[in-house]
Length: 431
Ligand code: IMP
Image (tube, rainbow, N blue to C red; front, side, top):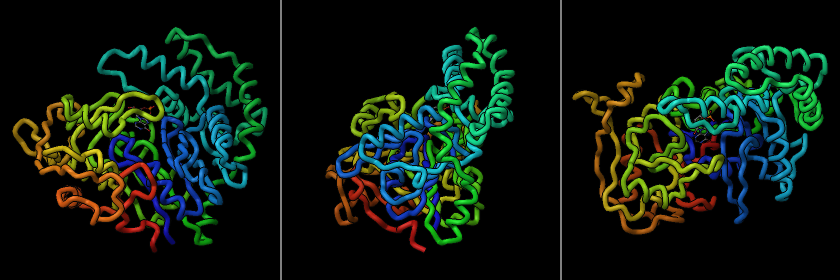
């Protein structure tokens, strides 16, 4: 049995798309287990670019089963559009190859409106910088027990009752925010219209996954966002609204934690963040600008410019621990080519004390100053390297030092967006 969980180990945008695609070729089933269409995964296959938000990356590979698990919040209108877009690119999607958990909560148009209205109304310092896709409000409805779930679309009476329950909460809230109330019949009509397009994909995912597991099929759990955006372990409140760390693969799909044999953390060779919130190693100088330009650091979902900074080994140690990382895939090493000196954050100075982790309290986080270790850079290009022999000595030293500092081995090293530009150390799927 070899079932692999892939999680982002920083603030998202670590280059998961390419690694997940690489691994999905070896998998039978690919499962999304949290988040929604706030994610943006870019896959480059034979020069063709696929941009996925809600669909598991496995869809673009023939012969795989793609699964949207119950831990996801699903915008059904967005999903249908995304399916049509990739179908127009020649990808085959059918009820045989795509499954959606019946207990997946839906993102409704009211969730996106609420998300955006709150962000607009927020004062400086309290804005989260969300993607505006309604993720937070949809998860609030889930834990508030007033979600409309995929299975509810199949029965008119249930659907009406669920809509009434949701609107009992949302309409007073909207009045308070000065937004028009929702028209019950119009929302019902929208849901009844989309239902027949979504229901063919609905399935008891927990059951199918457990059957696949027993049959010895290889399952890949594809995380979105990054561990530092986790609702519990991230830089709260500047986080997303789901658990992002590896444990969520079990609860977000209905498979027991014992099914997971390998946790792969995706780690960028430097650090980026989109949206607001603490970022101890952020660079607001020329070096930050250079990382952003060389790394093409613009969000796939919102097009926003990403904030850039040096590699933070202290934060990585933290995320390797909370996800129980077995190994990491280090990406975008080539973006560091040409820097004379590289810095790695190894801990923080908090009011004169040295810490080896980022404390939880916001005021302490704000006072933490990174303690850096400096390493010599390299002038040679590492872009497209496919073996250790292709790498300059200083690049190898950098990778080895990262492994040492985060106490986790490199399993894969990615040196360009092309899938074959990868150095394989350990195959996470090998039993
Ligand atoms: P939300 O997930 O739209 O609620 O946004 C909450 C925070 O998570 C914001 O800082 C977003 O920029 C960030 N975020 C959400 N999804 C992603 C992602 O896929 N990559 C990077 N950041 C993300």
